[in-house]
Length: 121
Image 1 (cartoon, rainbow, N blue to C red):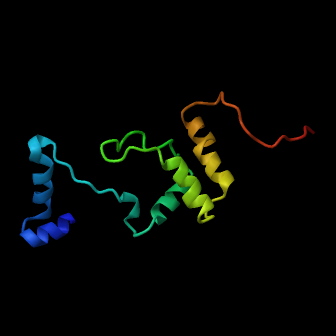
Image 2: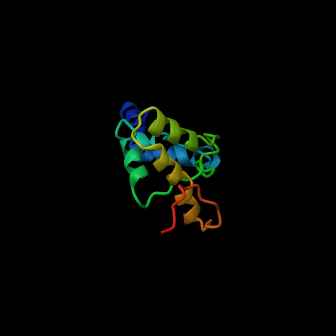
């Protein structure tokens, strides 16, 4: 149930419910909201963010969600959801965003580049 639904059913203010949950269990209370990227009801916000020139796509979730989710699904999801299943993003674009741009952000410029050979003029 959502905080809003519980607040309406119990007549307790939403902020009070949140504070009670977070401070309960000897200060180890948790509130789980796993659908941050689905606030519009779909992944349109994620799609827009993926295309923004300042967005860099990491290897996974960097371990931020190991208490709830323990996978490295971002690389596979990017390829299957946006490239294969919906063809919204070209394969070349996703590969470059997942590899070269992220590597450059972290200063990994000594890696090899897979690119088409150009004839010297």
